[in-house]
Length: 166
Image 1 (cartoon, rainbow, N blue to C red):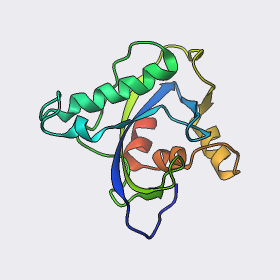
Image 2 (spheres, rainbow, N blue to C red):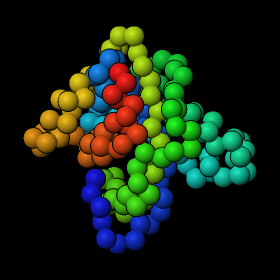
Image 3 (cartoon, helix red, strand yellow):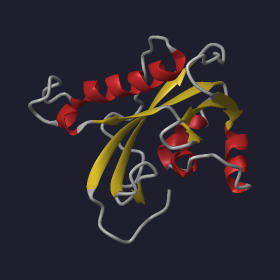
Image 4 (tube, one colour):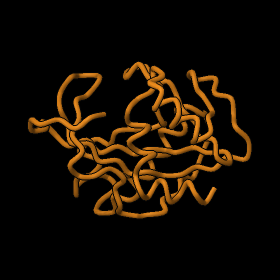
């Protein structure tokens, strides 16, 4: 994704599930974006409203969204880990054009981590298990279809710090 100069039409909150096995990350093929990306789910505005079923505890809304993203590709129950409660991964100024609608949005990502004992096989959608270094190299070489969001998140300082612990 790239920065854009015009004003965004809305803010989009996205829970990202970085699923890892050692230093390999799961990339899934997002049919709406027509590219490989991390499992992620957009939170609806009502989920973050004070009158939502979650009440003022938005952390549970985020955890449910991250678990939903993981379940969509794996078909299993999960317990996402949030090492930085309340911290967003992407800079608040990150504006991009939606690949799906063409509208410009301000994207705010919250990253959760799911460690798996073995790299599972997804029977739900196309997927890749790649070492972090190979994902970066693929992006640098312009290999497609890889969502620019992947590299954007891998370059985030809190994500880099977490990955070094694997």
